[in-house]
Length: 201
Ligand SMILES: Cc1cc2nc3c(=O)[nH]c(=O)nc-3n(C[C@H](O)[C@H](O)[C@H](O)COP(=O)(O)O)c2cc1C
Image (cartoon, rainbow, N blue to C red):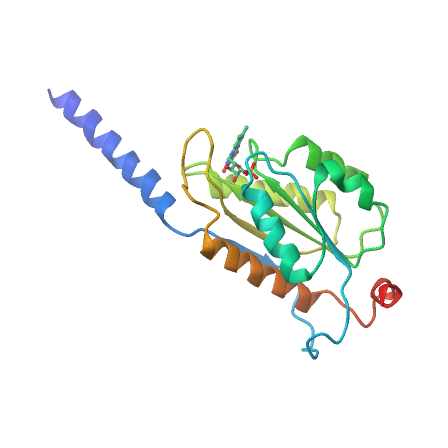
């Protein structure tokens, strides 16, 4: 009887830990450089592209929101070859976290990139408890493949198809945080000094 009670307490404890985490908003962003001096809105054109992989649509939603703010294409990695090589001031790459790393397609895409001036990375993740930690590892490995070019990183939750954690994520709050991240990128990537921006004007 005593042992059953202990098991019940343990199960309830972990259920509370896991699902209380799932009820909160865990979107987070981090920038590696300071914002540049404010410039008048619309004074310069930043040539950007968002490339992502997405198995069940979560990462695709975030990609589309970042691309909307940056006013650039949001391209599934399967179609990325049509857009590269290209002359971009900023390349933003997104992936779902799979076993603590990006998908094979994103790894392959990153390995093939050349001449990157500025980049940013984002992931969606859904594992309970250690998910955020795996997302950080995944973002770091993506940034490593991009050399020293990453301006910032973003992560948020996405419904996990197997565990069913984080239902309805990414939600409106995640999307508005993604938009804020994209604004932050725009404030940090040099435009006036960029020959690529000048070329595209
Ligand atoms: C095969 C597989 C492995 C996963 N591995 C992780 C993981 O290591 N850590 C994590 O937090 N989420 C993991 N997830 C959950 C996904 O990262 C998460 O649900 C993500 O939002 C899915 O994005 P998508 O809809 O763009 O594919 C995994 C999901 C799948 C299908």
